[in-house]
Image (cartoon, rainbow, N blue to C red; front, side, top):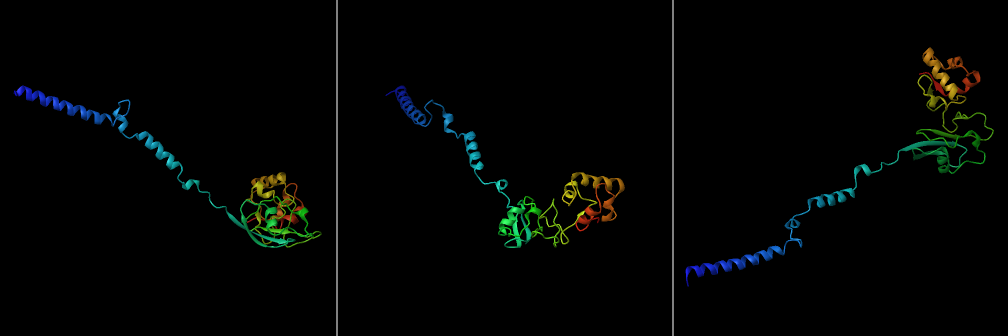
Length: 213
């Protein structure tokens, strides 16, 4: 056998082996012949990762617990006492917790829709009660503004705070603010009579509820 014949035989063998290898490689590629399909789709992997992260709990999703306040319920209620309630509740809500009011309760003096405040006294007077340890006004009934509660400073109070006082509506509250802006701070509570619309009777109701310092 000549050298040419040997060389030709080897070439034929190499050709057969090459075709077999191409067949094996072809079996790993996609049907459309694109070898790129063998590589991971990074865009899809990132999208899937984002979907998983979206379902993970976040610290921003946690709802803070509601603030708690304490309110002292007194007077004509079934179960008087100090109640811890959620901030944002109203007088009618805490009265329900106290078992409701008694038959003698004078609810005409109570603002059942008033919002509760921390440390507030909710006093429910008896029908016909003239004097009580807690001053109750038509505008701020059940707010517990009395001798033992915090008084409103008429030198710093806002219009919203002033209108909570008995006999003080928006116009008189504005008159108080205008007076102190023109004449300076009130030197004493009695000076309120210098404000237009405030007389001695109104002053008597305000004295236990307000202060100048």
